[in-house]
Length: 274
Image 1 (tube, helix red, strand yellow):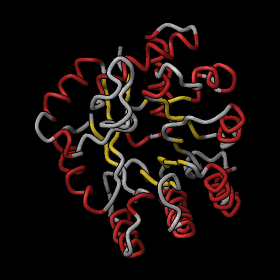
Image 2 (cartoon, helix red, strand yellow):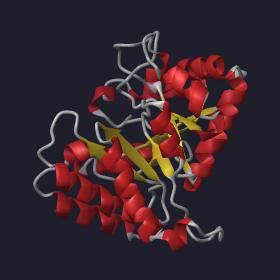
Image 3 (cartoon, rainbow, N blue to C red):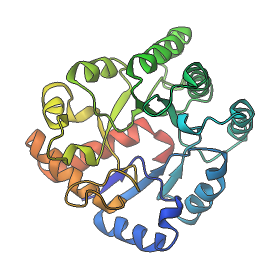
Image 4 (cartoon, rainbow, N blue to C red):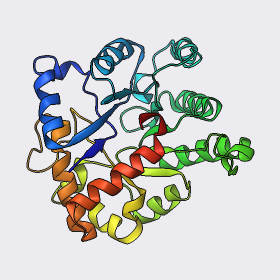
C-alpha cells in the first residue's frame, strides 16, 4: 500500500534528534511522497535542505502562515514572491497560507490581505494552494471567491495549459454545510488527518454525508494532531495508515483502494509532484 502525506512539517525542530528514523518509518509504512508546507521566512532553508536530501520523495511549498504574520509581513511576502519568480524553482504549491482567528484577531484585516496576495500568486504562477483556516470559514470563502471572480477566465478555462484554481483545505473539520460550500470550489480537495480518528469527532458522520472519497487527500500536519492510538504524542507520516484504516471504515472501502484514490487525488491536485 502506497500513500501520500500532503502536509507534514518534518523540517520542524521536534524532529531534529531522529528525523532520519522518522522518514525511514514513513517509507516502510508506505509513504511514497511527503509534501512540506512552509510557515515563515525562517523555515524555508531547513525545508529546502530536507527536500533536496530526498529527491522524488519530499516536495516543498512556499507561503506565510497566518499565525506568523509579523510586523514586516509585506517585506516577507515580497521576498517569497522573488523566490517564485526564479526559473525552475522547486515549490509545488503556495502554502501554508490562510486565516486563523482562534487565538488572536488583532491582525484581522492584515491576515485577509496577506492571504489574498498569496491566493493571487497561485493563479499567477499556476500553483495549487494549501489553505489553513481556523475560526475564519466565512472570511476565507469570501477571499477565495473574490480572487476567483477576478480571475474567472482562468478558473473556467478548459485549456490544460492554463492553470486551474485549485488546492487543499487543510485539516478540514467543519460541518456538512461547510463541506458542501468548500467542495463548490471544484478543483479543491479536503485534507483529512488524525482528527477523523478521535472518539468524539463529528468528522466521520460529515464525511459519510457530504464528502465523496474522490475529494479527499491524506495528511498528518506532523508533528501535530496524531491519530488514535497515538493521540497526544508527536505525529509522524507513518501514522497515516491509521487515518487510512478509519477512512476505509467510513466509506466501506478496502484500505488499498482508499490509499490509491487519495494518492490519485493528491497527484491531480499537485501536478509538479508527479
